[in-house]
Image (cartoon, rainbow, N blue to C red; front, side, top):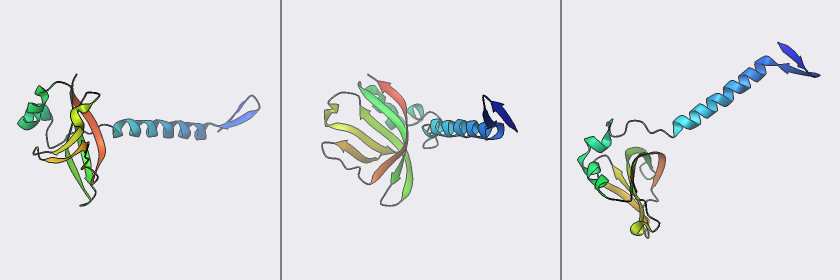
Length: 127
């Protein structure tokens, strides 16, 4: 169906499809930032003792995350611990798997070149 708008013909179906596509892309972009359940935990700060222990420090941010191990080409669920200070104490982030094993750290000497953060969602922050 075409509608004449000030000497322009507009195909209503094409406009509707365009709007739906833009909404879909927007929805996907927003939902991609959400990590969802990690390490089979609904509330990892309560269910994982080693992670809960990290919440006792000031200037701390903890995120649940999904990593890609580039060497083994596999997906790893885990967490990112990051100091929230301008200087960071030499470490800007540390990556952990579900068991609390450190995967790598970023700072003065980075060891995270084999890991890529696919998704990340902050679950705790204490300034």
